[in-house]
Structure formats: structure tokens, C-alpha cells
Length: 109
Length: 114
Image (tube, rainbow over all chains, first blue to last red; front, top):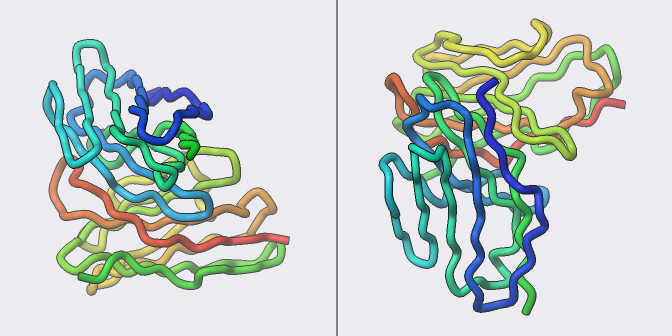
């Protein structure tokens, strides 16, 4: 079973803090990794993709990938209440994405 | 640029009936994916269509089926509806090719089976 594991949370951080979301995966053959944000009752929105080891930064978001440890993370700097959502980690196989169940993030004002 | 569109937004059916859900991909995308998201559960992969062909299906019974039309839009059919089919059905699209490109989701169809 090719699985993606995420802590369900909720992860609570104060406004302005750094939120750190983590994900592990079991398929060593995975090449592509994605982070989606899903607000309650809405569809997932792609926020980051990462394909090689190391860090990738986009605005307040930084994705980190370590294929040797089968670990991918998402850092959100200067967290805002509008960042409160469930964050889904996904990795690619040949034909589709496998999603984790998501981590709920709560940012308090 | 228009995103992925889905219709209807909500659908209420009775157990045993059939449901048809529709999806239009982003312009230029030829791959369409269907996912089910039941309450409290993660996204479960249902079907992948590319160039009119079914490329892969998830661990769902045959009463879940679909097709892709020449304009790359897609239809998901669920026959003999059961109560546990109540869920948010999400369509995503991506560029074609082996391996996975970024998938972009539509707003979903909320199916309720009573």
C-alpha cells in the first residue's frame, strides 16, 4: 500500500508565527510532491509542488523535500487567520496522486 | 483563464437511482481525474481519463464508471446508488503525458443519497 501519512492535528499557531506541516510517504519511487490547501466545504487548491531534494520557496510558503528520509514538509511564515484550513500532502505514482488525510491548521488572531 | 468546472453543484438522489456528474477541464488539459471525498475521509482516487481512454481506476466497484468526450470533458456515472456514496465528488485536470503534472481541482459536486 503506497501511503501518505500526516498528523491530523489540529495544529494551532498564533498569528505571525511559523506553521510547520509534515508528511511522510512510503513509495520510494515517488518523484513529484504537492501541497494542497482545502478550506472547509471547498475543493483542494494547489499551493506548492516540489520535485527535487531541498527547499522551494514561494512567497510565505516553503516546501522541503528529503527523498532519502521519505519526508516532505511545508512551512508557512507569518501565518494569518486566513491560512486556517486543512493542508493535504500528495505524491505521484504513474497515473495518479495519493493523498494524505490532511493536517488541520488553526491560526489564532 | 477558466478553471475546472463541474455540474451540478449539488445532487440529491434516492438509493438505487443513478447519478451523472459532469466536468470540463482547463483549456489545454487532456487528462481528467475523478476523486471521492467522503465525510471524514481523505481523497480517494476513482478514475483517470486521457485522450478519451480510461487509463486507470481506483478501488471502487464497477457501478462507478465514466467516459471522456472528444472535447476532453468528462462524465462520471454512479449506478445503483447506496447511502455510502454520499460524498463530495471532485474532478481535476492536468496536462497529458506519463508521470504526473500538477492537478487542478474543480469546485466539486456534493452528492447526497437518501
